Length: 242
Image (tube, rainbow, N blue to C red; front, side):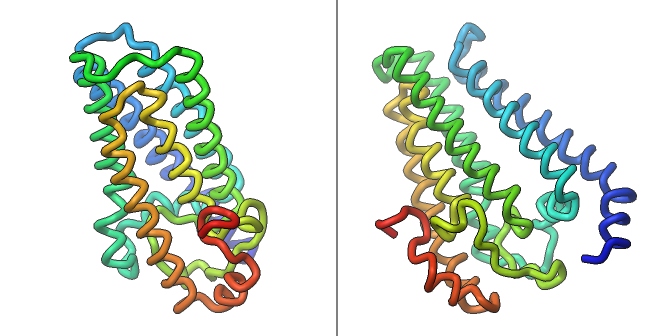
């Protein structure tokens, strides 16, 4: 991307990106808290407040950094769903991991608190689990900031000069974004002290593994240089495992 295009993206298009990203962030936090508290039937639930606060810290810091560092990627993530070459299967799978799974987990966690379906774990264990969720979210943000092609949907971004990224966490695994998401979901039932949150967590983890496999195959088939990169970085999600 030449300097003129960078200036154009940074100047003319940064404002709508900021507005869209800001409105989405605000709506997500409001919806999250509304679902959690409506399901729980109470406001004195420290886990909900802590989870919302952590989400805001991660999203505000990572998205603001993204917009300032790489406004072109910020535009891509806002507009990716409308691109024609998004893989058909990802139009189905992506909402499961990004919308359906989280909403189900919030509803179930709140209902579990209201009706006491699961025993309450010690606060110390829940805080550790929250730390694991924070770590997973942080790794995902790192991957996004390193990878200028970190779109929300699977597509080969020929319009943006799509190339292989092998820096940062991509030195260890080929899909650190999915790996970080799985790590956070493993800790979610523990943080919410809910056996039943295991069900949406397993759903999201399974779909994330499927997305990883299908996206990896797409990249190997369609992105020049990716097969060579895959030969150097052997594992998709977990070093030494897969």
